[in-house]
View 1 (cartoon, rainbow, N blue to C red):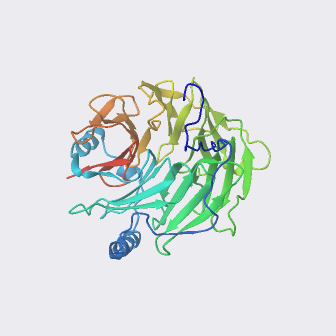
View 2: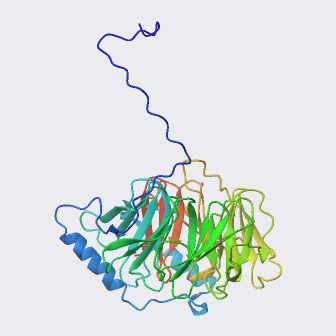
Length: 405
């Protein structure tokens, strides 16, 4: 009967639902979301203690990296060798593939966060590993969380950006995730803090635009927005000293822009960083002086540029051969500077045994983090700004925390 296209008796065929168009973006309703985790148990005392802990460590004096924190290379290597991965320091924090990771700058507690492809944000109190791991998951967005950061000047705030066109700020003192930026027409790719106090953000849009938004201004729209000659901007990084400059990575191009010139007119780059033959997944200024720019490209190269004179030319200093072909099921690599050691950076690796690599800006391999408890590719990695802690996120929602024992 099946071959003759005859419907069996007493069987009703349901009509197929129409396919959802790809250009239709589902978004969470506008407005704040209460800080209530989806995995919270009936007893909410643990959550209350967690929020009090987050509030308490956010009142510490926050140390910022300086030239004095940069060690000589041998001392830095020794500090890396002391960092180990214990079995209890591996946890599934979010349901889906990790695209962003953040670490609280506290000197006494280890609090990490991750965002996944489904719009979830997970928070993990790593120090509480005696029993069941203390992990809280929040459904904040409807699409991938491409950028996640504790505000360096007020780490009681956790900012999350999603491809669904929203930016939220989780304020633990008020137990709410406020919606601070919303665009129902275009989606976002990344953000960085533009103003020195973290109140103004510069946001990159997938439609080749940059916008400035002020968290102090009522409403959830931008202050000013400008198109750029850059296809599909992926990351935006603000110069740590000359904050009017930002470097943006796009599909095949990397450009430095003067943020003060953002207007309704097309924004022209101050200078371009040449030589990338394929899509660039990230570009970041070095965290202390901004004298270097680190890029990760799909042409299997990690590049370091001299940005000490960003208004003229940006010469290439180092080009490192590196397998950046992660495929469609893994998050793309994004090499990132160590904020404590601005001449060194970390990046994921496709090599076996699975590992996270640390390079010097001259191209030499400084160290490799690998362990029997690390059996997957960690594409997204971040270092603590002052402590010997490395957090790596993989494509199954797991975080791996290497730290000094």
